[in-house]
Length: 137
Image 1 (cartoon, rainbow, N blue to C red):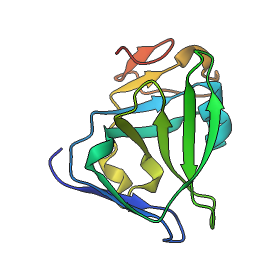
Image 2: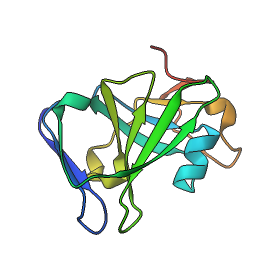
Image 3: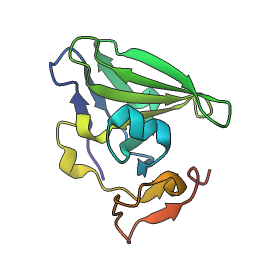
Image 4: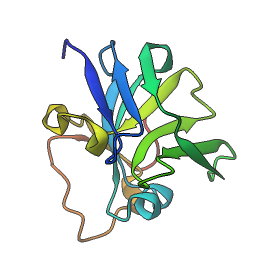
């Protein structure tokens, strides 16, 4: 996927551009992502943090995951839209919420992670890789 990714929040207070190809696109089914997204999973586009230029500043909510590492979810303080995800264990990576992309149709998940936490009503694409826990690193 060559080209620039761009997106932001619903009200326009936050906007980003990324000049690098995604490192991976995935659906995270962990309980924290389910709760944060209010849905079955979070659709994440992982990109190199250094390749992202952001206008506006997300407010971050920090939690510590089951592995003892922090996860910070960035959202717009004005409209509440989720925009980014930062992982303490991968500090050079930035997750962009696929729904925040200006063109979400470019989202093509390669894997489903934390499928052990997925709900029975969450029907996953059988063509994507499945990992019971986190992605293989």
